[in-house]
Image 1 (spheres, rainbow, N blue to C red):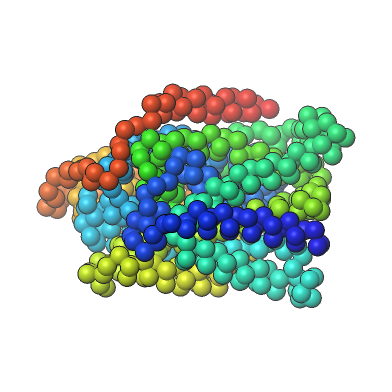
Image 2 (image 1 turned 180 degrees about the horizontal axis):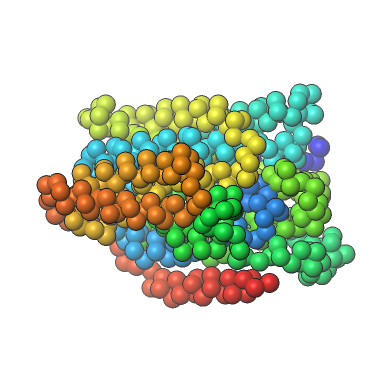
Length: 534
């Protein structure tokens, strides 16, 4: 245990020292300095930060747990991200950076009106606190408890150990976000992101070496032969009718609601796109998004393959508790001296998503709600202080909610996606309408937003229709667009929206952006063609 603690402290200390040293000359008292890292982020930093903001313990624990029980079909959430990132790099990033945005709701005020911006800002903050933050904290605590056995060290119950871990991780993560701003988050993300790739790959590699008696390919062959059906990425589950509600990811949903969700998350979600808004230039923003697309195609080796290996080791014995598979596998294959490094990287992954979400929520509240309704003449220093207090308050609520997300019937990752649908699709439809449909008015946008919220909850939770929830996303998106057009036709038209260049940075595109995008499309198709009929 002493070696584990030592390696944990050494790596964690190095990350903290490096990020602090890099920030020594930065002014964090300005709006751009605190919320956007001074608009100075490069492609590599953006990619590392995006990867770690996205990949956290809800993926390592939740997706591997789902892969263990349901097979590789869950991989669609990751591989198809590359296509959405292409859309972000080629279409959305140029427009966001041209307008000089700090938040996505800011665009909605420019395109529609202040109330639309406020409604979306509130929905974002609620979604952060009610879904993402608690699940990230809980899955992180679950993994750390399983590896470090905090409850045994403190002589308390496992449930109390998870509570204590949630409290510690939540407080430390909040401190990072509150005092370092986006640039602190981005720098720590970059180091921890590549640390996660190394540590995450070590788990399946060491497991396969052990299974194959020194030959990783032989080990993979044995895992495959043990359950070849688990490797099929094309699900035969029903998306409509009997069994659709309990299905994990029917193949046809990739062409309906999943497309909308991926585009929203990678091109419109504040905690993700904030890195792009903090880019030093359009060229670096496009590099960051496309590099992330390449990493996302490789990420299943970390967040799906270990789950399949877990089935080789444990069979169906953990079907009632799939979220315990990954922590057990880590304890089984990692040597003691590497465990501390792994837990440090895991902590970094938790901090990244937690910090990023807090920073985004603070940005949205300070600039979109506080400055608009509470103190209109607030200066930059005041807005930064409000942002810090917002982070602290939201962290407090997330820590309190986190222990109550345990025992999700379909696994934690599935729970996260189902809850996200309440907020993501209505927001996505309004933002998409803002860019694609000039005739949609502010009144129409608000009508679509409210209709979408009610429609999803009513159809999925009240009526409980026999449709997979991702299909409901697709139907909801189309209906939202129709409602917006109908209401806009029946109400007075808004003045024509003109997108002006704010002149904040160089908008010259990366010359290899389109070529790189074609490569990502080919790799994504190859992935499905090679694993679709195993």
